[in-house]
Length: 123
Image (cartoon, rainbow, N blue to C red; front, side):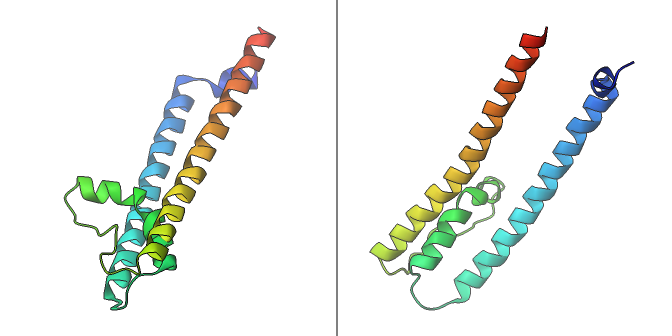
């Protein structure tokens, strides 16, 4: 039996899927913990939020979705802000986070398509 057919046995596929699910859960818990810690420390500051906090809130906004879905109230926008600079920072944070996530997703997708076309060419 060659190594490629060994790698595709049902038990190996199941093991890989379970491993990925475990890694996703660990990452979700870590991101949620960091989000809660940063939100608490951000709420303790009495001054208005500026560009830096806007970027931070923008980056953390997509990570707040699981907390919001499970009923935990997480602040994703500072009501006490400096105005335009905060909003610019927030926009930069949201778009930067989306660029990183979707950039990685589409890079991975194109890699999988390339691999699949190479596999079809060999058959």
